[in-house]
Length: 208
Image (cartoon, rainbow, N blue to C red):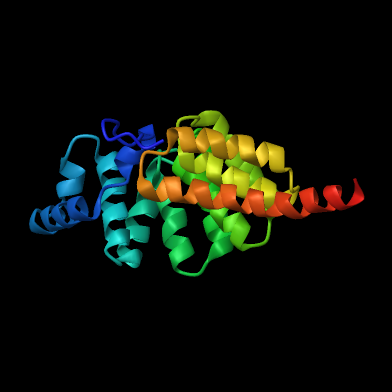
């Protein structure tokens, strides 16, 4: 359950996903100092961060150009294919986006944001089994993320109607939920389980 003394959990890759306020600062600095991203330490990492900011600010073409340049030099650069996938998805290119996410996971199989993104894209394409597989991976590699349990529970409910497994996942997620919105998501899923169980209980009563 939510605890005011506990900070939200962060995955190691979250550092490459800057906030909106951070993006404004980074974008302004990169425009003010020509070649700034290349001059900073770890230039490839900084170019990926800059590209992520440009994408967040709606500059998809510039972001894609930077990410493809980074990948041409460092094909396994962490988070580069992930952000390229996000850009391609926003451009309405789901097939290319899926390929980018899969390339990200080939080099960084424990990249939770990439698994969330790929799973969401597969769900949009109607691939429920693929979506569930990605959420199974998320729960396995990030057992401290409530969101993963809830999304896997949703997949279980849609795919197999295994109410007991879904309930176990929801309970695990609620125990980790550190925001009101996550708690609300868990309680909505629990309410759905209760609503599904009521007709079955009524039928058993009628037959008994």
